[in-house]
Amino acid sequence: MPRRTATLLASTLMLIAILCAGVLIPVPYSEMSPGPTVNTLGKHDGEPVLQISGRKTYPTTGHLNMTTVRVTSADYKMNLVEAVYGWLAHDNKVVPHDTLYPDGKTEEQSTQENAEEFSQSQESAKVAALEQLDIPVRSWVIVSTVVKGSPAEGKLHAGDVIKSVDGTAIKAPEDVAKQVTKHKPGENVDFVIVPAKAQAAAEKKNTTATETRKITITTAKSDDSGEARAIVGISAGTDHTFPFTIDIKLADVGGPSAGLMFALGIYDKLTPGNLTGGKFVAGTGTIDDKGKVGPIGGIEMKTVGARGKGAQYFLTPKDNCAAAAEDTPDGLTLVKVDTIEDALGALKDIRSGNTSDLPKCTTKG
Image 1 (cartoon, rainbow, N blue to C red):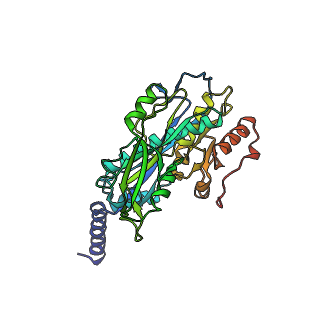
Image 2 (image 1 turned 90 degrees about the horizontal axis):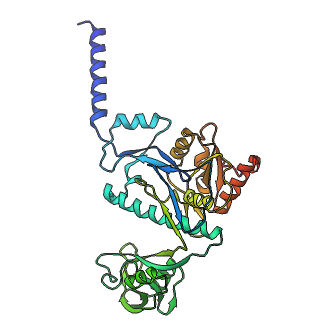
Image 3 (image 1 turned 45 degrees about the horizontal axis):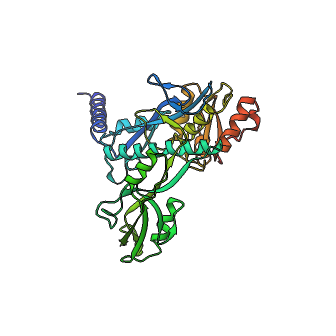
């Protein structure tokens, strides 16, 4: 066999071997890509995304789209060829598998966590919108979860209202940890609670629950701290009673990043006129009860997805601005927001045409 032919054959076989290895060898990466974008002012699967009853609402036009990111499943084994293709593709992003599923988190665990975050984001969106409209919302601190095997198991239950800890009134979830960590492990801490059942019964009657119980719990040492930090094994959260019904109908979506757009959609439906002036505005960002907007993951995928659907403006959390501005899709204006007030101000400029006044994102933030 001529030397040239032998060399060519050897090179071909080597290439085939490399390609086979690339297909067969798994790599510890996952892929993110633009997901669906849904207009919070419109319908999804045939029904309105935002459904409000018991309060006057107003017609809306334009778009206030929430955005999403698709990710490969926890069990999916990406191969080297797919990883290289993802790195080269403009609209996709390949990231370490542990970034999406830390500590060996399963698909089921991730889905459950995302569902809980999505539910909490809806509650905070409702509160933030109503606060902007000076509509009072009743709020209280509750036991969100109880860790199995912890000192609190069997004594405190999810949904219990925490009135005080060691005689100090509890006004915010973080107050609970402040009081507990004043103790050393092995010391007793006193909770005064309204049992979850009593609270639920009072809410049905639209009254204030009066039944209280004093619960004494012996603290333990935290497993995740080198210090002797005292814990009881609960996480605290906030529950609310709204003066009318606000339902958010959106299936197969998880995580907290739609909070800002839900809040703006609710605000728009409860006020005359149109927030967007008929423009196509999309965005993202977590939101808390006070209207503070927080950063999210996958910002580059969300801007691509929004622009692909026709968005002209994208409300961007302040802390995501630098990353988003590094590769802004043509025709999309990134607007920096840090609070719901910032977003409402930006929408006022957009509908009035004063776009030169918009706080725009740059690669510096």
